[in-house]
Length: 174
Image 1 (cartoon, rainbow, N blue to C red):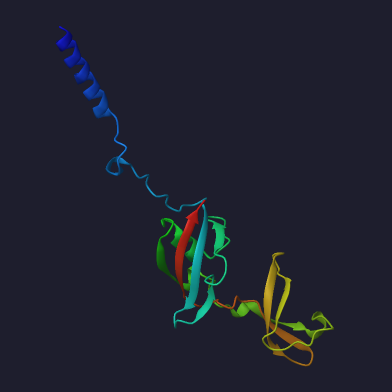
Image 2 (cartoon, helix red, strand yellow):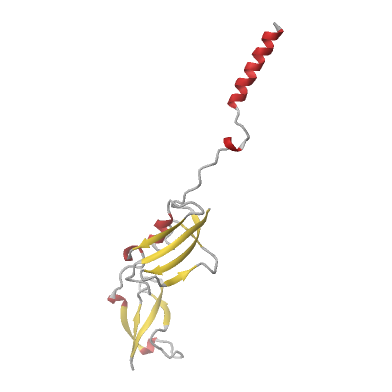
């Protein structure tokens, strides 16, 4: 009878152990890597290029950028391109004009009276000014022509009308 009880106890212990997970590496479950989605704050290294390969911006020698997906702090094509990536992933984003800075618009080029330019400034073509936009936001204006009584300003983003390519590496998801 003692032998039967001992065997029953061993069987019960064996069944109990079968339900326990091993602590060995083959039994360690790796949680699924988190995937970037709307609402996540992400940290990204990037290099931005024009279609001809000209680099216009890069975080390579500086800190990566941090933004929250869905807040609209970066261009839509960049934001959407990061969705679905995991920390450590790298890829190339081909972003068309419509998902970048939009089409260049001649409606954003206009003349102002030279008296509207600060008097202590000697306006020159290529110079950039900061000023108020019609919607109340602050805009950057590039001087494209200087005449005796007027200055022509361009409020288009410098990358407007251009398809962009970004090489990105997702550093982390918070």
